[in-house]
Image 1 (tube, rainbow, N blue to C red):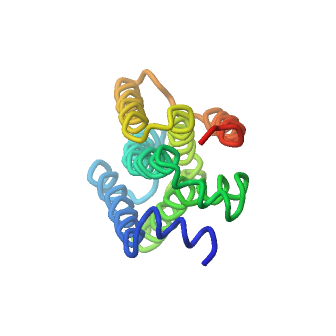
Image 2 (spheres, one colour; image 1 turned 30 degrees about the vertical axis):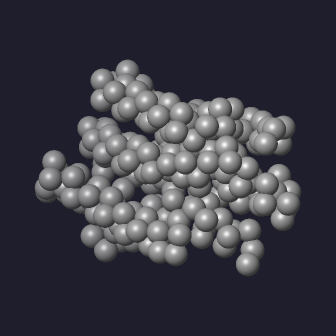
Length: 207
């Protein structure tokens, strides 16, 4: 069994990943229903006001997924760092390959599942979203996930990392609803910088 398969089983159990697939479709359906409840006469996002509404709904769903993501990062990787379970994985493949595999399983996989599920729902419902909607989703999703990963690697305490990260999510939600924070493509670029810092710290973390 390869590293990816082991980590999926370790993080999600036998059937846990199926629950995330179901959730992705539920959130995608909720996105379309929420938008159409506000704009019942159209199936397309074409005005500035409609785009703002669509993005707000998308950001809220991004924060919901990020919260679940944080659980995998803080209580998954964080617990492995805390109790030394991670040593078994590191002996198999080394730090670089483990970090890449863990980042894919803990962060990228859920985001990719959501995007695929949402595209399916968009197609089946004949809904036309903004052309680069997935960048808007990934900008906030990766930004908070990568910060949570940074917190987890630094603290190496699962529950402490989890609660600090959750406070971060509610903080961003408050700022978004108050209009004090705007998601942009610059955040996506910053996310790539943060994950590189995560990688460098992970290469040097003591276990």
